[in-house]
Each structure stands twice: as structure tokens, then as C-alpha cells.
Image (cartoon, rainbow, N blue to C red):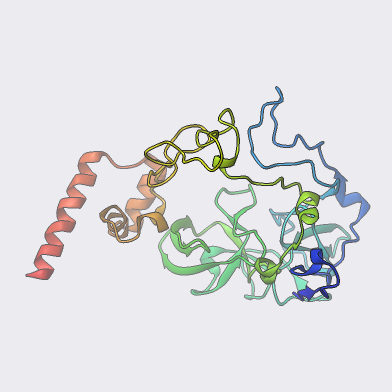
Length: 318
């Protein structure tokens, strides 16, 4: 990706850094009009997603995340920019004459061939089952439900690593640091998603953000008391509360708001070094499959795991 730094002829271009290398010229039969933007409102006109605006109108490209064209070679025809996401897309022309858009794998160029099959060479852009891939390989567009298509590692520049295999499961390390078990029958695409330099882009001015549909974000202490618990007062007033809160009155800092802890997770970045995390490292692959198929374990078995872990640590220290 080539980042273009603009000459500071005006204040708006002083910090602007955008990518002008890839242009978009989509196929007419692979695009359709997007639904009218609701600006973060529901059917009653109430704001449900803050800081959302209308943005500029654009077309929606149909992207193939399933890659169900098996045993048919395809050739990369064009590389384009999708206004609906930060990853590049490429147009694939298959041997039977069908055209589809897919996420652009990194290091692939126009003219390269790709295919999807259960067995084949490990090549950039190929769609293969996880069980047939070597360890420490970079992958993207990972399935977590058979036939539903890729759902993990689809943003620009993201990747996941295959770090372990055991019987019916494989262990993946995601870009966020999470490590989770996935069935080896699920498919993924080899190599990283293109547009690695997306994080280095700088819009530079408010116009560019409003073009993308992003409204300004203001602090809670500068709005009216009807809009935020921190608002109101004369001049620069304190929040008049013991702890900071969200716009809906809940504690903003220091409180965990997500109680969902799936048993397919081996390691969560929020629980780094805690006892709950180490319990999941003690699980066996067979136990994980039982948890996925028959539900999580009971609290008694978890307590037994905690006691056994504490006893093992005590023996190691002694």
C-alpha cells in the first residue's frame, strides 16, 4: 500500500495521508444499491448507535466469503478498493466464466491463479481446510460455522496464526491476542489480508470523516445534563460524582461488562495471568469437543480444576 502525503498548501491537508493507488471500477452485476442510511436511529427515530451520520452514498459490492467454487481455478483480474470496508477486494474470473469478488490476499498480483479444494498446494489465496495447513502459517477469512463463510480475520491487514493441532481441533491465535479452538474441518484462506498500511492513514480534516458517516465526538462534561450525567454546571464544573459513568449511568472504568466466556476460548487478553485463564490451558482437546457438543462443565468440576491447579503449583514451589 502506498501512502500519499499531501503538500501542506492548506491547513486541511497539513496532516492528511491517504492511499490513492487503488481505484474502484466495479462490475455492474456484482453491485447493488445500499439501504438508506438511518444515521444510527431505529424505527422510532431514537438514537441507538451514537456518533453515526449519513455519509456519502455509495454502492455495495457482493463479496464471496464462502468460496464454494470447489476444484475450479480462478484468475485475479483486477484489484479494487471497497468503500464499505478497509480491506482491498479483487475480482476473480473462474474457469467456468463466473466472476466473483473476494478479499485480496497479500502479495498476490493481477494474473495469479487461486483455487478452493480440500487438498492442494499451500499457495497464497487458496482456500483450504485448517487440518491440511502447516503450523505457523498466516491465514484469514476463517470459518466458525460450516457453510456460513469466513467470519474471523477479514479486516485490512489482519491475520491469524495456526499454532497447534490435536485430533479434531486446531488452535488459532487471532490478531487481538485471543487463542481459541476451532474444528480442523473449517476452511480458511492462506496469507494475510491486503491493505496493511490502513492504520497509518490520516484523514486530516473533518470533511473526510463526515464523508464516511462519522459525527463529532464530544466529552460528557461539555454537554447539557439531559444528555450526559457529567453535563451541566456553570463554566468548567466537575462531574459531581464519585466515579465516572457512561451516558446511561453505568460505571465507566474498572467494571467488566461482558460476562460471556465461551469454552472454546483458550486465552482471553482481558484475563492475562489470572487463574481462570490457566484453567483453560489445562483442558484437553477431547474435553473441549465435549464442551462444544454437550455444553460447558458444571461449577463443581471447575472447582476441582482450581484445586488441582493450586496443588500442582504448590508441589512445583516445594
